Amino acid sequence: MQRTLTLIAALAAATPALADVQITEWMYSGSAGGPEFIEFTNMGAAPVDFTGWSYDDDSRLPGIFSLSGLGSVGSGESVLITEGDADAFRASWGLASSVKVLGGYTNNLGRADEINLYDGSGTLVDRLTYGDSVLPGTIRTQGSSGTATSAAALDGFSVTGASWVLSVQGDSYGSGMSTSFDVGNPGAFIFAPVPEPATTALMLAGLGLVGAAARRRRA
Image (tube, rainbow, N blue to C red; front, side):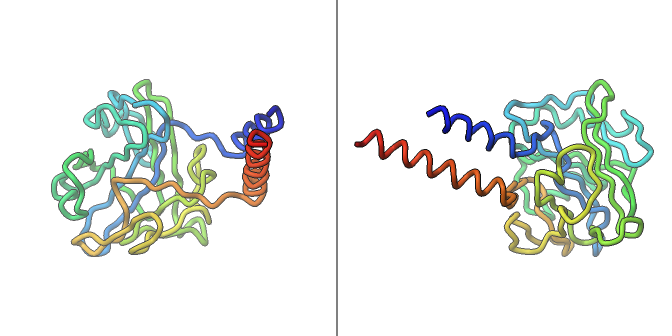
């Protein structure tokens, strides 16, 4: 039993810890007039009150665009901001009215930029730095959004790399096409990273131990 508990602890340690709220998707420019957007997801177990929270680009100034209108964001809930009208954005992507969207921000993203998320005290919660023109080999989110493929891509103040990919219609993240012919999956973040080999080995060993323990109990 002690070995099983030790293994469970090792499995937990093998999974990177995430801050409660993360930047989980963004598109800096639509391909045919569609507005840019940014998605934030509460990865924690408890609701987060966005009162006083704010967003800014690479000027790095808290309080520039208020996120207070998002209210309480539940565990696993994804919320969005867009440069366009909120209702028009929902209609374009086929989102339910329950999906929280704030529209009309004017500190727009460029091809190479930053996304900065601040809490109510002005403390930086998450930062995503991107730009295919200055970071060769990284994605360009024009007409297709960027989606994280691993916990490492989300953890900390990240720079986009191989752990972020462009959304493709019908991919494992549930991506589709908007009425403006942009591709993405705004409004619902599906987190399904591929485990590292060491983590997979630990998981298989853990299943073996649990199975053996069950067999001993039956005997």
